Length: 271
Image (cartoon, rainbow, N blue to C red):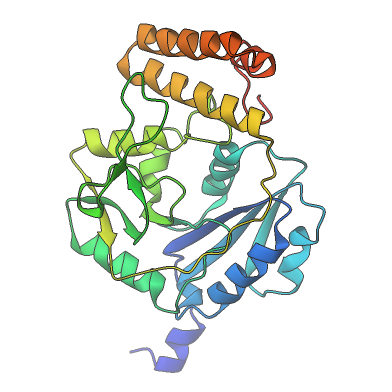
């Protein structure tokens, strides 16, 4: 029989991979990593920061925080590709997608994991936050939902099995910065699973004073992301009607730059 000392020396499998996407926001990233450093069981989880070409020192924070791995990208390829790269690198059975600026308590990951593993009907688990319905063809904005009927945890911390992403061959490359995870949560709903929300678990969060993506590109990325989602899940004509409607709307309101980006299918660093 092994002694407690021997058990401590043996390597233990990583259960949770914590993914944080960041660009030029070291003032948000440092408090997030500080809170992660205090988690109760760091030997059962890993921290992967996907740095999207930052020039503010973010990409060197692994020198300050032990156990943090920084995946350095040369520029912003969009949130979708960043998460795919991190998921392929991740060693954990579960991924915890944590927005930059969020701060966790030491037992946050334990609580989320325990809740997910104890509820067979849950496809993912989130702390308290804002939740939405999955969009339907023609919707240009997300519609809010209560936590009990949440379908889409947009821009929220979420923990889910890594296999959920692997089994769908990761998030579709058609998406850029926004809505790439719509496909994931659509598939969770189709599978008859729910989004479990721990309403008594609140994560403090700081947000950037200035966004890194200009408003016109962000709008084009969102609309082209919704177009891709409608085309994939409601038929090509649903996507074409939405795309045409949004392009004509931009033209008739003299938003020529936006119309050009919609015509070209632009996304953040479109690949």
